[in-house]
Image (tube, rainbow over all chains, first blue to last red; front, side, top):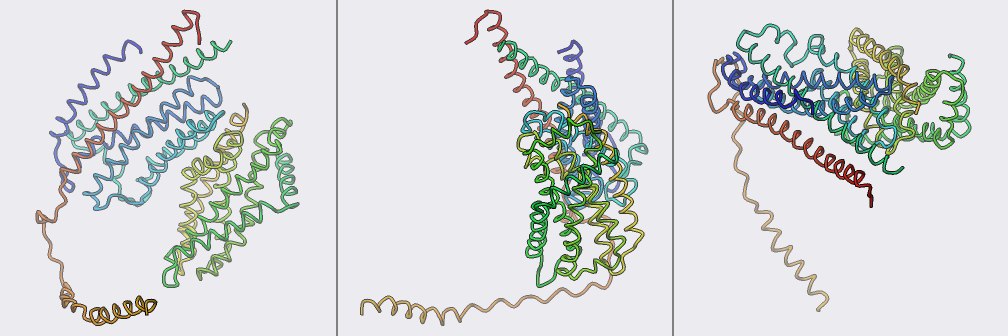
Length: 218
Length: 224
Length: 100
């Protein structure tokens, strides 16, 4: 692991420990009250979910058209993180919605397209695991379609009548809520980078294992 | 490029017409799907609201998945896909030819399914025939565009039968949603055509995105 | 006689149970439907028993985040440990020039 890794892990841990204090200090939202504080982890994990999907898509495109195994390892790692952060988003969201909207789930555009994107990430992992030879390219093709979904997920709330808050909420946050949100966002972004590095390291070790086995067969 | 695609389409149609195996079995499967849903969802002699639109599109999706699997299985067994790839033909042309074949098969199935659904659910499916045809064709192209790409990719993979739906259904969710909403709007006695136009525009945009992505990735995906 | 005994028992059972079945306890008279409301009365704060408590939802959300992240780290760590051990084993085998 590179030299910057462990120090950054330490910094990230401290940030995550500090985040709840900032979140507690932020004002309550007038209509939603206490439950709105889920926002400070829900929005960053949703952003990391979309970011993972984009990283996976770009790495997949570079793998398909360039053939670099490093890009393939990056794509695999990003897809796994997309499933992780997507799961966090899809659990924290309904917990918030139960109080704010009165229902666990609604079939509006944002939720439906996010669920669909999450299923594409799962499908990527299934294909890599069970697809047999050639599954790396197959999954890469799938990831490209999944990436095409990301801008749609983001702008869908602005163009359709939905129950989900619009994207205009974030830029217009009052100061203390904005501070809590962006600090949590930084926590999650750093975490994303660290998790990606660890997961890519796992893939690199697996590749090393494969080459070792192959060299033994000679 | 067009000539190659046309040749491939003609080849597929010729092979199919000889036995009509895939056509008959796909059609029968689609009809039994519709009936199955009808039995499951009809209560006190009436289908649920919007039931006809949803049932039609689900049957098309299921039958389409089956048809895709069977078509490429046939290619795999005779190793014709490898032969096609070795031939000096544009890869994208091969894709377009196969896509047109699948679309033709599904449209043929829809020609039978639409009247059947109309009869079973007393749905006025033929009140706006032009718009209904636009919805069905653009939706079918969207579904088949992704399906043809993934089926071709899966020809050499393991567990290909179960992986095709796993890959295909999440990606084609927008196509199905748009198709069902548009069809349901067309079935309303006072449906707004403006809304139908919107859904058809969305379907056409999805078609463009999917076909472009598929044409772009077909070559690298099919080479070893 | 013996063959018709079971039949007799059955008939007897039916006779005994028949009147008993007929005498089901009368269902309690249901209260009539509430009177239709003719106007809505606004209230600015729901009474406490109608409000859904937010704290359990909030705590569950954050707990899930922690568990998911921690669980993922454990999963990656385990997989990494397994692969690392295998790599080390192979490398030492190669260094020693032996392989079973």
